[in-house]
Amino acid sequence: MRKGWPERQAMVRKPAVAGQFYPQAASEVNAALDKLVHPAVSAREAIAVICPHAGWMYSGCTAGLVYSAVTVPDCVILVGPNHHGIGSRYAVFSSGAWQTPIGSVPVAEPLASSLLDNCELLAEDERAHVQEHSLEVQLPMLLRANPGVHVVPLLIGGPWPESGGRDELRQISAAIAQSVQEFGKPVLLIASTDLDHYEDQETSNIKDKLALDAVVNLDPDALMDRVIEKEISMCGVAATCIVLWAGKALGATHAELVDYRTSGDVSGDFTRVVGYGGVVIG
Image 1 (cartoon, helix red, strand yellow):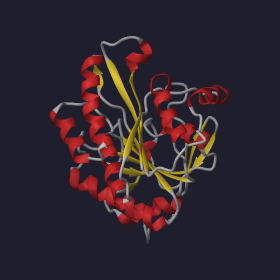
Image 2 (image 1 turned 60 degrees about the vertical axis):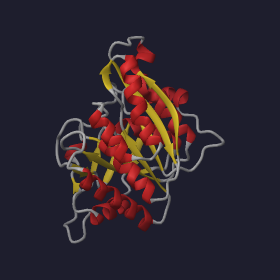
Image 3 (image 1 turned 120 degrees about the vertical axis):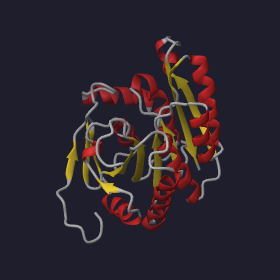
């Protein structure tokens, strides 16, 4: 909550896409997670990750490999695209909890409050989050990786791909880095994004490589330039740029591509695919 603002009742955000993007029954969610998330003995601390958000049947393996590769701390900042265009351009879910079929994930309220205080562009806006899937699909996997996880959900809306412009995205990234530094405890940044949408496999492979090369090189400006110049329909490009800038401000020096695939690799239909990439940044 912003300093001096009246206290508001904490909201419990109910699942919007359980039964669509991932199972609805707790037993089925856990069975899926048993196959997807296997935290490794060699799991490493990370500053940030890039993770897809499609239905688990398509992108769940990529997401699971990301969460299996890193140590998920008790606090996570989730940044993703607002596909529905509802609510504020830069919307923070600042208090309460998110329900999932396998348990609730509390909001890291002190960290959310700090983030709001550090950036006037951000707004407390739960309404923007009610229908959005890009962050929700991450939560059961985060719970499996760390049952005590708390989150700060942030949605980026506005005109695609640059939202309100790179200057605004940089301001948000700077506020994230400042808030993490002030928080003084480990925080994982997550950018939720899919890659190129609805082109043939060969075209998507080429475009996705251009985008992922920029991500692995920790070059958000190159990423945005390539998305615009090559018409790469990467839905979470603004969220990814924010996390890359913030990650670099927090000391990130390298990134690793953990997995890449398309929906065609699952369905066998290579005429109209969506790309998914998982990246760990340290």
